[in-house]
Image 1 (cartoon, one colour):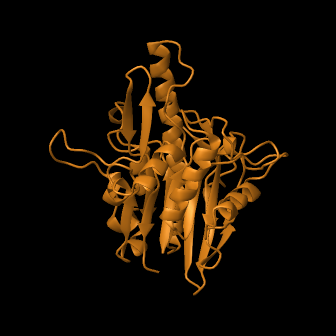
Image 2 (spheres, rainbow, N blue to C red):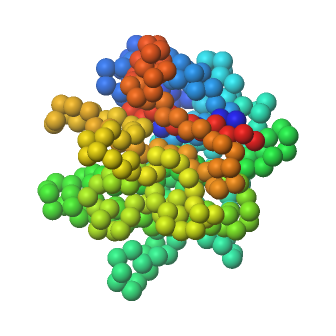
Image 3 (tube, rainbow, N blue to C red):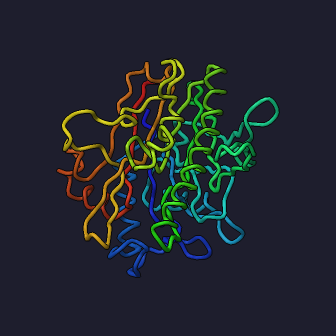
Length: 337
């Protein structure tokens, strides 16, 4: 079975106000890419990915005018994808939903949020935690509540899946160096709080002996920025349980820095253009983490990077589609179940 996560940049802008696809020659929100080109590229990527389930990060918005599920299912129908059923959890106000596209011939999927009495709060509620060590509790919420899914194979095998889009640390809105530093630290605190909350849920699943997959865009990773040393470790490491007992850790091989030569290349799942520097910046932001029981199934991870993955690079149509479709690239894992 193949499970994947894919952050699709500005997916919402490829549909009109009534939820109909805009396969035309107008510009998409991606630089120098038309809406028809981006849609076509996405069709190629999803087809090549051929996953049984794909977490779609930044899926089209869900509101009173248009709905995420019909939009994703019409997209799947247009390109004949076998991942033709869609599911969302708690919708949000950011125009970036967290959704699941899956193959109904292989899996049954249900939105199944946990939390409440005797457990950590439900993800559409709030968590009270001291963020700045001032002896007073702060209220933390998710702008994009994680998607909790109960998965079941047609053979009756059960899995839990949590899809996430953790808060960005970027200091948006800063007008000075001092403001950028302050906002970046505030955002880092909020992000760590979200990751602590998510780790509480992970522990609850592990305590229950459930097989768990946590995947999505974490906007974080070990060694990604200079503020990590200020807070001790990354949010990703908190969710993964690094430093804890092996039977309590989640695993993705990309969650650890590659130790070696200082100029050794690091894995990356996203590629952003920096106008001021006139060059691209790469980062590892997207992960598929498995609980220990799933790690025993001999999993195989893959980053569908157009330059770093040999098959993607040597398949020109797929390579160009990956570059046109989004500023992130899919990350997948194959497991035996």
